Amino acid sequence: MSAPAEPLGEYIGAQCRRVDEALSRFLPGPPACPPPLSEAMRYSLFAGGKRFRPVLVLAAAEEVAATPSLQEPPGQAATREDAHRLALPAACAIEMIHTYSLIHDDLPAMDDDTLRRGRPTLHMAHGEGTAILAGDGLLTEAFALLSREPACGEPVLLRRRMQTLSEIARAAGALGMVGGQAIDLAAAGAATPGGDGAAFDLERLREMHAMKTGALIRASAIAGAIMAGGTSAAIAAIADYASALGLAFQIVDDILDVEGATEDLGKTAGKDAAAGKPTYPAIVGLERSRHLAAEAHAESGRALARVGIDGGRLHEIAEWVVGRRN
Ligand code: GRG
Image (cartoon, rainbow, N blue to C red; front, side):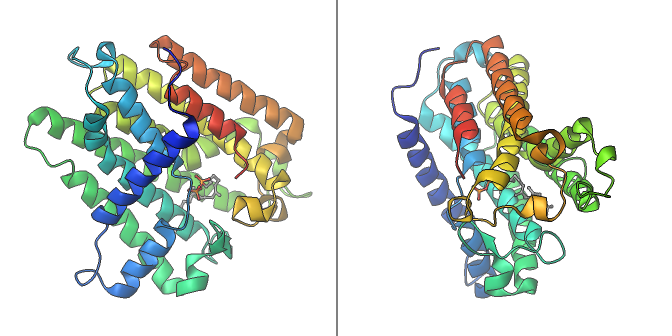
């Protein structure tokens, strides 16, 4: 697989514009949706997130669409436009779910944070009640979107849509993101001297993050591969790539919480350590954390190589994630 011609920065910029336009179209607005709720949902959704998960959905769909041997039944290369039409609803639904999770994570009852994506958190700007409802609204609208788009009557597409919805629901729910958040909530203070840090070893940390952040990242890549008609071997390889990528993303996030500046991160730096949260640097130190991130990155490349798509856009996205500063 040869390296893509368009530089990654331009590629990501174009995908972000595509996602923003579709999010604007898919999200209900006034008069049917009460204006304060609509404003609150949009405040957080269009606050300048990196759009990493939707970019991953679209890149996985493009890769499968462009590679006939990865398609079931073996097909002809489809256009990028086809891949976008099929995968954009899932890309947008996942960004809505991710944004809801950040809104709820910032609430006083959870992480109690005042800064997100470089501006006041939603409950600071619009009040706690509205922030809770905006999160609920985004989560529910995400599944409404997945249940109706892309509009089609063909059994093969309906089956893909249902499989995608089911993967995303499992990743977002009690066995995925919400479950991981519950473990995290219970673990606050575990990494402080005198806390039960010893009980929170590397394996438990990895499991918690695989649920809390990894599951939705994995579901993003899987959703793109399913919607573009990937074979089970292609979907499995892309899922393994994204599991390793999700781990690398989280380790880098933990390192940035220690080393990054609040202005760059757009959220309060140093919060995890202050809350005594079990993180990679807290459990194994910065040096070993960097090493583990590099290992996970390499693992993501090996998964892609299994189906001959290493060196393409998904590989570049992994490099972006590991090298990011925010
Ligand atoms: C409240 C149900 C519920 C879940 C919250 C994901 C999560 C679970 C909380 C977020 C806490 C956090 C900062 C986790 C670290 C990894 C992460 C999800 C970072 C934010 O994702 P980015 O960097 O954010 O993709 P942007 O703003 O760029 O979209």
